[in-house]
Length: 465
Image (cartoon, rainbow, N blue to C red; front, side, top):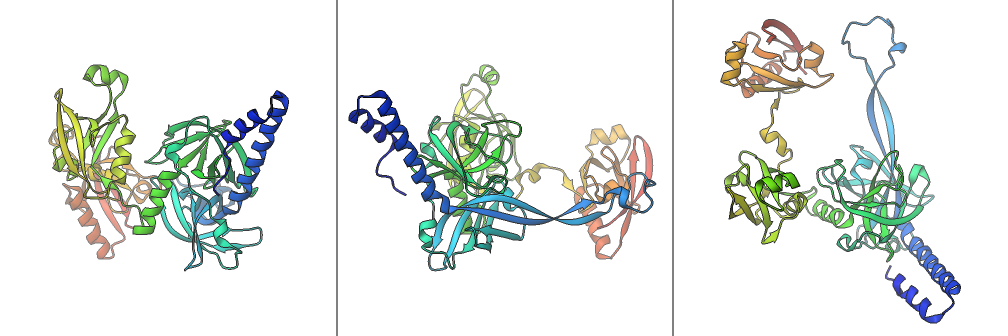
């Protein structure tokens, strides 16, 4: 998809060839239109429709049940499995000739947990896709689809660009399947860069006013050279001209991780960090950087000496302008990579070298309360001061209860203190989990919990699942 003439060249040649302003404008517009048509013609064959069918459980309308409207309080409504079909887009990024398959990029939220994913390659060809890998943290999924029977399959592959070269104001084109209207083309400009929406953990969205609607997710955002610079992902409901795309460089990194490892392997420091705000900067005496709010136990950060309150101001000798700089650099560093951090501690600049580890599947769980097996309870031990205040010995404080879980259905609520299980006192989360595991191994279907609620003791039976 290499282009012989760029847009700027077209404009300059038009200016040189004619001195008539109207003729010059007409010439520029005509050539620009021709270029856009050429780009669309070349890229459109690489854009596919993705269908993902998932089975979800939906509560039955209570009016359809016998006994309506008489129900016991907190009685859970029965659920019925229902198929839900999600529609999205995808972009062919590779043709594997030996295997005769296409490799396709799309969004993770399009694919979800579906085991039935289909891809429509042409108007008449629809095939089952194999999900090679998914990454929730960036909302990228990689699919594989047979190219059997496709004429000249290598011509269906899109050319990937470099999102580092994307600039605000550049013309971009979005192609996708909004509301099922296949290969719809919209055009606009890059409105902003480095946007964060809070949808995933790793975000660096390109914002565009090219129309993006439901069904566009997973389709390409293309620059004026016909190269893919982003994967269209999100829109702002109720807003116009507010679409967002994942930078193609991030998508390519995720793709290579999935192809090489079958999943995404990230480097990890084990810290929770915050951006230095202007108010913090004035009080802390710094102009940039990220402040360490939490150090996870057993993490590389703890091992190599990072502390809460440290302000990281440089990374490998370069000033750290934002939290994102550290987050993405760490993520892309293979486990075992040594990062050199410039840290301000007690108003003095020190240097720490930290060797990254492999990111755990759920880093937050290292410092979070434990869920008690499958009961839907989030609990933690009472500290000595709390034991004296509540006048109890040992016990576990219920911090949260998952709605519709066995614990919720039994009537346990946040703030309850679990004192014993089947008359055996509990003092730790591990002990509680061991006791529940033993009961399940013995094929027990229920347990009786003694709880303290506002100073009153209650026995509550609970089902074990």
